[in-house]
Length: 236
Image (cartoon, rainbow, N blue to C red):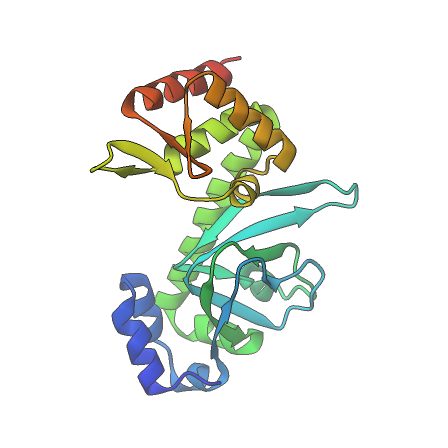
């Protein structure tokens, strides 16, 4: 279904400056060719070796990049959030196939734009080109750092830093709460699910975390212990 004026206006109001710029500068030929779509949890938006036919603008939700190697090793710590793109590198480089599998870890709303239309758009509009370039450069920079840490750092360190970074503070309960299940934590950290369970059990035994309705939680004092523990792990 092509993006109509009403649909475009709805998204324009609902989202932030990034999406307002994207949709505010979207010419009619892009709206005609593009479509609003969604994914449910665990559905792929692209798979490794899929033919490159479209680029994708993520409006809302979260996805995870899964790089599968010939050796059978799977590397999957890279997350993609709303206000980002999928497939633009392959489209810009005229690749025949996608290099990674990208799957939803929540409901995802997105705009699908045919590859040729997307390339024409970024060639003709420097503002859109800059947004795309900034996104690609930002992801490359963060992913190179994450990849280096994934190789050289203890996986417990990756879990502890993930917990500290992503837990939300619940002020009326005075606790931090990681609102994600084990499968999602495993996908976002790249840690094997069995190893993850073992690490969580160890952190609980050390009194660094508690479990609340099977979700990880911790107090301010526990947070200090987690931070100290992460420093110890990093310096090993």
